[in-house]
Amino acid sequence: MSALPTWETFHESVQGVNKARNQDRCLVLGAGTAEDPLILTVADGHGSAAYPRSHFGAQYATDLFAHRAFEFATSVAQRDRAGWRGRLRDYARIGLPERLVRDWQGKVLGHWERHPTPDEDPASPGAILRLYGSTLIGAVLTPDLFVAWQLGDGELTVVDDDGRVRLPLAPARAELGDETASLCTRHAWQLVRVHWEPLPDPARAPRLLALSTDGLSKSFVSDDGFTEFAAGLHRRLAERGLSGVAEDIPRWLEEASRHSGDDTTLALARRPVAGADGDTAGGGADETAGRAADGAVGENVGSVTDETAGGAVAEGFGGAAGEAAEKVAEEPGNSPRDPRIHDEETGRP
Image 1 (cartoon, rainbow, N blue to C red):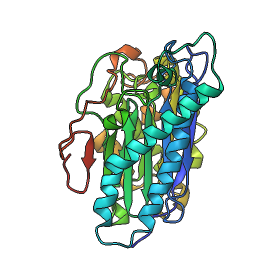
Image 2 (cartoon, rainbow, N blue to C red):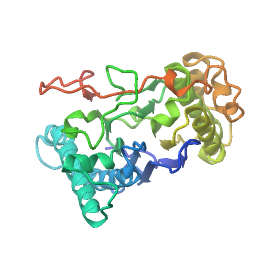
Image 3 (tube, rainbow, N blue to C red):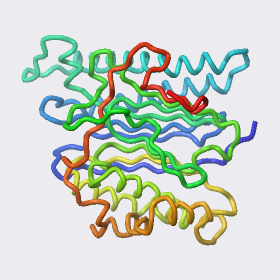
C-alpha cells in the first residue's frame, strides 16, 4: 500500500456581521497517515431565537465527530479479516451516523440537565434538542480511503488531481428557504448523506478537500461562483503554497460574511506534490492548476481569489443570501440505492 504525502491543513471561522455570537465550529486533526488519520469537521449552529444554545450544539457535534471518526479510521488501519470493506462501508452508512446522533443527543440532554434556565422551559426531550440544533459535515482520510458525512446544509468540496471540482455530497434536490436537516431533527441519522471513496492509488486522492458552512456559499450569486472560488483557491495554493495564502483566507471569509450576513467557516486540507507546487519546488503553478484555471473555470478564476477581499468579483461575492437556495436533505428510504449515499467505488448511489 502506497502512503499519501502528509496533508497541509487550515481552518478559520468568521462571525457574521449580523450575529451576536459565532455559532459555527470547526476542527482539523491528523496528517492523513494510517497511524494519524486526517479528520476535518465543521458544524453550523442554527443561531436563530428558536435555537439559543446552538453554539453548544455545534461544539458537541465537532468534538463527537472527531472521536467517532478516529475510531472508524482505527478500524480501517486494523483491517485484517476477509470482507472488511463491506462491513466498514455498512458501518459508515448506518452505524456511525446512528452512534453520532445518539452521542450528540445524550450530550445535549446532559448539558440541559446541568444548566437549565427558567426562560427556556421545553416540554419534551425533542424540544430540548431543538435548542441546540446544528448541522454537521465531517471527513476522514487514510492512505487508501476517503469517507465523508453530511447532515444539513454547507458544502463538502473536492478538487481532484486534474483540477476538477466536485461536490460529492450535494443533495439531489434543493429547496428555497432556511429549513435544513439538523442533529435535532427526528430520526436525524436517516438524513445523513455519506460519500465512500477507496483510494487504491495515491494519484487518485484529492488534491484539495474543503468543508464549509453555508455562510460561504450563500455569499455567491450562483453555484458557479462558488465552484469558481474553489477552483481559484486550488490554483492559488498550487502557486503559492498554504503558507502564501493563509493570511488571505480570513479576508475572503470576512468578505463572504459581509455579503451573506452569516457566520462563515472553512476547514481545508491540501495534498502538496513535491516538485510541482510553488512552495515545494520554488516555482510557479503546476500544469494541473493551469489546466483548471484556463479550462475548467474560465478567465475570472484569478479575480475570485485575488480580488474577493475588495469586492471586485462580478460573478463571485455580492449576491443577497436569499438568491442562493438553501440545501436540504431528502428523506431517505431503506432501499440499497438510498440517494443519501454516494459510492465512488461503484460510481452510483
